[in-house]
Length: 137
Image (cartoon, rainbow, N blue to C red; front, side, top):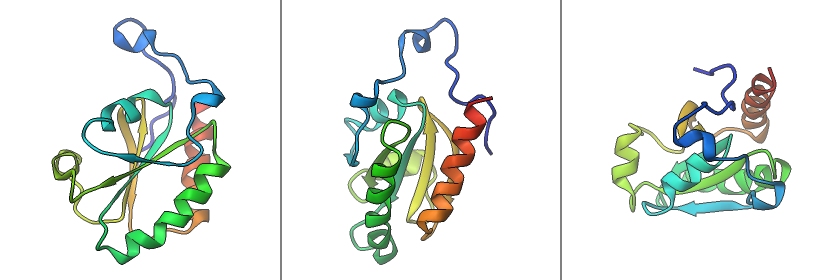
């Protein structure tokens, strides 16, 4: 499910002191995530995508170059990360990841949508563009 206004910060509480990172603070590569940096990563950005994967998964390896390409295209708009589900099975379990590759789309720590399986760059771009367009309203 995609929520309208997903990038708007809540007033009051801990969310109000966070600011949208400047363009220079956005990664232009796919960040390797693990338990110690996962929450900070998904909570920092208005839109982040986490690739839940495993080294033994051939379809997951297919997606690596595609995500690297997208991370360059969307620098300053979307942060990309990848989480090895074998090393961080507790996080995969928390988000009920049943199949990989699985892509979780987060806005300031809240999961807004997801997709599973090998996807084309165009399919992922369509989802990202949809989310970015809805955030402008």
